[in-house]
Structures are given as C-alpha cells and as structure tokens.
Image (cartoon, rainbow, N blue to C red; front, side, top):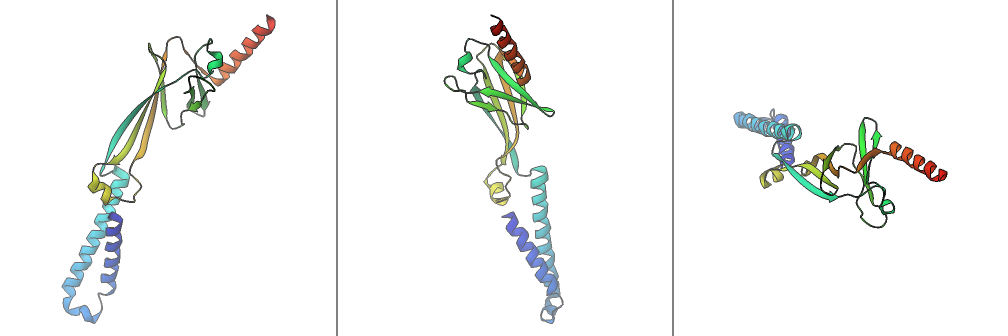
Length: 191
C-alpha cells in the first residue's frame, strides 16, 4: 500500500510539473500547483513512513518465543556410562555449542549459530536447552497492509540459547575432548 502511494505520488508530481507550462491549463494554474503540492506531500509522506519503518521499526512490535528442548550427551549412547558432554568450539571471537537431541540410537548433533548469544547455567534438573527467539512483527493488520511487500514482517531480531546442565555434567571444548580421548587411549594401552 505504501509503495503504491509512493509510486502514485511520484508519477502525479512529475505529470503536474511537466504540464505546468501548457496553455491549456493556464486558467487553472492555482489548481495545478495545488495538485502538484498534494502529490509532493503524498510522495514525501510515503517516503517518510518507509524510512521510519526501516530505521525505527514504525508499526512493529517485538514478539518473544521460548522453546524448551531436552539435550543429551554429545558422546552419544555408546558412552552412556561415561560423563555427559556439552561441547563448544571457538570460531573467531564467538563460541558455538554442539549438543545432541537424540536420547537413543545415533546422535542427532546440532549446533548453535554464530550470531546466537549462548549461556551455560547449572541446575538440579535433567539437562535441557531453552531457546528464546525475539521476532519483529506488525502491531496490527492496518500496519501489515500498509507496509505489505516490505519484507519486514516476522524477522528474527535475536536468539538466546541457555543451556541448563546439572552440576556433574561437563562442558568442554572440542580440543579438550580430543586431549581427554588421547589420555584415555594411553591409559587403556598401559592396562
């Protein structure tokens, strides 16, 4: 809708400016300039609303969705008697977390995104992941219709992952896990 009014405002303004010198409209010059001013106001108003929507998120509100996902050891069921592992990997200044969502069978490994904010907290409950997504949506149908085709509806603003793990569970990097595996293999070789 706003794109339509923007286009109409530009077209009418250009038409009124180019037909301003025609003798046919000389008698109604005041009407001509008035309509040119109105079309300019429609154009500038539409442009201002578009900029406010893009920059200040005019007509938008933030919706928060929280999802609770049980997580299991990254070592899988083969190491059920072993320690629970939540792995992390440094990627530049950011840290990715690797976790398993399958209790039995082959591990279904997943990881957090680089842009996510991730936190590890201790709990006395079984391990789980709380995913909090903030999305920007239109306040009501009027704004949804006004800014149709702007592509700004239902946009993920941020994602926050909170890993809740019991006290006896280990959170370690992939490098630390590889060192631990080598040490365990050396111990088994000595026995």
